[in-house]
Amino acid sequence: QVQLVESGGGLVQPGNSLTLSCAASGLTFNRHVMGWFRQAPGKDREFVAALSWNGGNTHYADAVKGRFTISRDNTKNTVYLQMYSVKPGDTAVYYCAAAVTIPQLEAGISDVYWGQGTQVTVSS
Image (tube, rainbow, N blue to C red):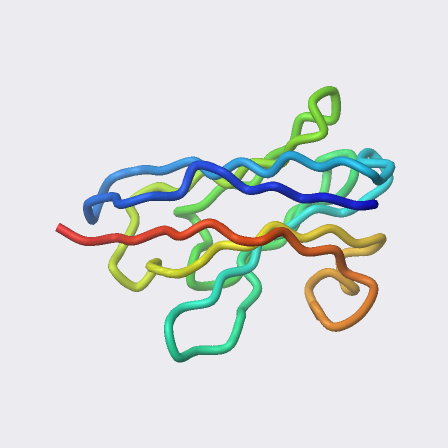
């Protein structure tokens, strides 16, 4: 049984930083693409970032490019999302995701494993 467990969410002031973690189990972690999505109140879930199994290929949504960094530690079966210079528009529930390929993960439709999500609120 695949489990993705996010942590690290919370309340953060605009301009500050926050790091999310996602611990994976029940899958061959170093053979899966990992990524992050988010869903703001009243909006659809949207792609944030993805990282290939060896960390050599990254994709970011335009809204977070240059501010967020995705990384992974295959020895700990964990993927991270470092969020810098956060904005109120970054407020959302952040979901960890796993898939076999980056296009599959970015589509977020089928054959994607999901975590339960962690709330990030950017407010002063």
